Image (cartoon, rainbow, N blue to C red; front, side):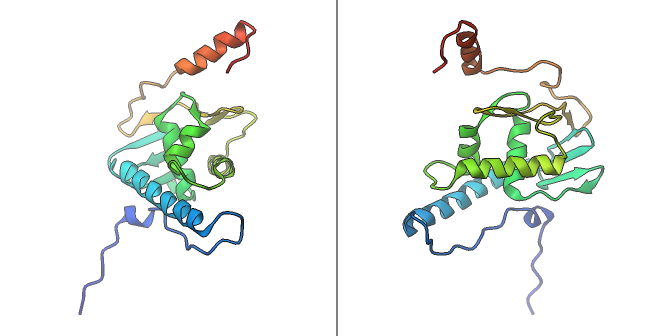
Length: 192
């Protein structure tokens, strides 16, 4: 009699592949299959990247995000958050106080050359993260929207060992592109 397979906690929280059906919309079956497989491969890459951080835990407000277990908790209790929104939250936290563009989000979560409605996917994932964190987009405590550009995680973060992250503070970090656009806008010129 074969022994029962051992399922680790990390495997329980790994994003699951969805079933695939032949499309009825305008994309060809081949494009849909490529999207599906590409998204699955990208999700597996993200899982390997974030799942390989078994000891990485961060805290913000009453939340704790365990990268190794792929789990978000509030006051020690698990918060229901699907795989893709959780990956998005991890990405934003890894880039605390820095703008993460919608293009960067799309590349990180879906990969390149994927024929999905990435804009809708990003909007849905952000909405689910905000619901899980009970964050208000008008007065954000965690996720700040930079209209037409992307998002930034603005809450102070404490590492699992209790030390504050290097980015924790009142200031923001700006990319060279953001600084250039701000200079052009201040000069009254149209940013590219």
